[in-house]
Length: 66
Image 1 (cartoon, rainbow, N blue to C red):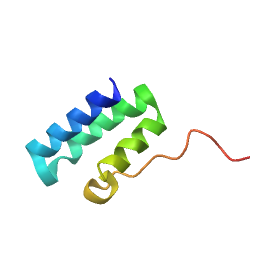
Image 2 (cartoon, rainbow, N blue to C red):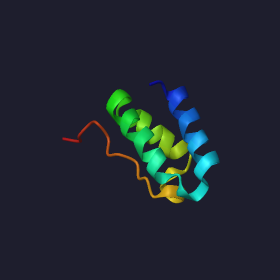
Image 3 (cartoon, rainbow, N blue to C red):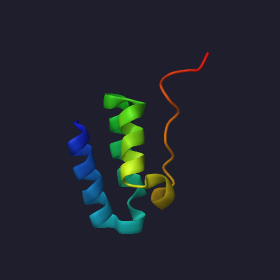
Image 4 (cartoon, rainbow, N blue to C red):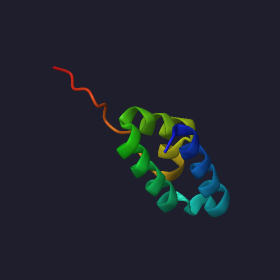
C-alpha cells in the first residue's frame, strides 16, 4: 500500500461511515503501520485529525532518545 492509497481508503471510510468509520480506519492504519512505519502512520493521523475525530492516537517514534 502507498500513502496515497491509504488516504483514499480513509476518505472512502469517512464518506461511507461518518462518525462510525473508526473500525475501517483502524484496518487501514494497521496496514500503514506494518508497511510504512510510524512516520507514515503519524502523518495520516495528523492529516485527517484522527486523534480528535476517531480517538486514533499517533504512534511513538521509531527512534529512542538515549
